[in-house]
Length: 313
Image (cartoon, rainbow, N blue to C red; front, side):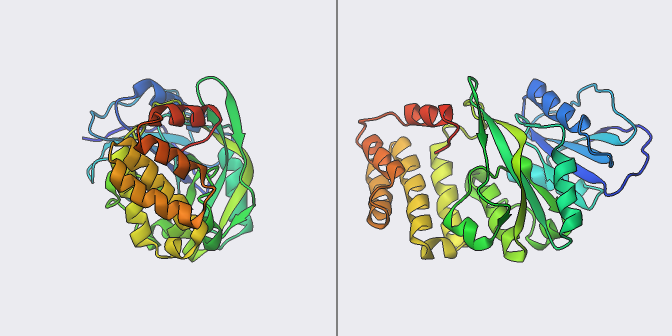
């Protein structure tokens, strides 16, 4: 059953639905939801918390008149993609934003992003830069440009553009088929959504940190190397343009090879790593993957060091 707490709402368009998938992290989820409630944005915000493989249990929060809070069970494919889609289907508004349950929005996030939708009526997705919290220090991750095209995203994932910063026009989500639930382990579902949305219109960005992201080993996906490799191989098959750009093909091949090496499949890993190095001989991730494939280095150690510098694998 769903759960809803809804005070009287004074409609202040354009209203936004914020979708928060969660799985057994009530304290983190409460912080995430509170950061939405406290947005400076004057419009109405509907918050939908989607409980994935856990009981619906909303936090007790004081809600102003233009904030609503709903709880739903994930009734689609288990995992992040299905949970997001459950929220998208249930959304009542024309703009849909994402927030992972271990992240937080900074107070002016929606205010800054919704201005861009007003200024650019053709925009289907607006993102932002982010802060990365590794548990010790906070790193700002800017985005190198204010407008990102499909070609830009093929060449470079632009790691500073995190799913917790995304705000979509609902029509854009419907046009791209929502979030692809077939991606193994939902790894790379955010990159897939970016590539799909950018085929419709350039992505607009607020190039200052508007979301605080935790990279401290608490992610659902941390260390799930086999699904990580399978998910990225799926993206290569779904988006042929990734194979046509040598830098992109090397990058993703090195990610797949690194993950396979970390999963203990050294021989198969080295096939991908050799492919990566033929295209980009100085690909550091690929060389690290080679060392891991021969058990000369720990994948967990490399991932933790990368996180300490606000980076991911």
